[in-house]
Length: 539
Image (cartoon, rainbow, N blue to C red; front, side, top):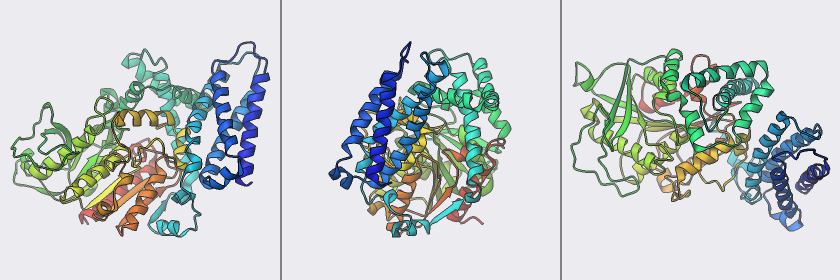
């Protein structure tokens, strides 16, 4: 089927659904049907406008075809649902209608962008194109032989988690007491086991009308005392785990770098304006030991994920503890300020200030990092690359390596790539949550083309100064495509860059490596450890 036929058949399908719903004799009109018909009508109008010969010649065939394939999947689902309609819809049918309206609304938002994706875009090229051949030469395909198995494991684990969240926060305006909340979370896996279809309906319904407050509450549940205690059971502890607070001794991250002539010391108790950091080590060292002269000259500088709005260094210890033990060097994990209370560039300034203090005064702790790697996942991957950009553009000595897992590289809501469509079915970062996170972090003033906001826009003159860079991402992760675009930019600058692509993996793999999680994600943790050993020259 050529692109003209695909567009035409999609338009016809939408028209049939609209006509069927118009002529259906409802005793009581479903609540979401008017909005659904409005979205479908506007979608059909836009799709019909692509049918002219001139438009068909100018649109990006590849991105449009990918998009239409996804759209048709949901249209067929809606058509199947409509065939079971009665004069009065059941509650479950009303819920299914609401869920599909949410997904079609997101697809409609992309419809304005999809046809106009540049024709030379990486994901609009044949797999045999020279650019892909070069990229595949630096790509390691992991778990390709067990892709279906991995996919099913992610769906099962994330389905259980999402169902528990939906039950715990069923009344979004009146969250239950903590004890009841955790009880309902525990029921999620039970309901999923008894009725997968019903459980997933509840989870997807829950995501149709999210709020920033709700998203923060859900993702921050790992910060609660009860769940932290539970995580300690399934996460191997580390011998030395200390939180400190460091002063800001440099100009703001968006200003030209000037160090302050200050001798402010770190604190072991909270101080207003200081940045919180967690130090992990296999043994006490420096001022924390009986031998204060002992200094570490290698370390891992870690920045956690959480959509810029949630989580902390503590909730990521499921894998930072492992890295610390494997490399036998300290991990410094930064607890930057979170949106929406602290939108861009607050979080970035915190990691910048923490980095600068460590370089300038780390010796007072027992840390003299001649060699260090910067590591981050998801939102933390964004901040890791933005920090590296700031360091290098300020003429300062950069890290000896960068490791980023599924980084958020492009925060422009008006951009499109096929992998973003995975968010329509993602149960941890669903399409509705992605929008909320971007709005919260960007605020009213952030420029999405600024490299400190969207690292995909880092200029070549800075990329040419980048150290060896390693990227890991799942092939079902909404952030997948930008990882390859960024890798290509580094490769074109002649840099040492590698990608590990994990088959069947969705977003957040490192965090599922706990006991009882997804066993295969431990491979991601160990892959990152191997990379960091190479960068730091550790045998």
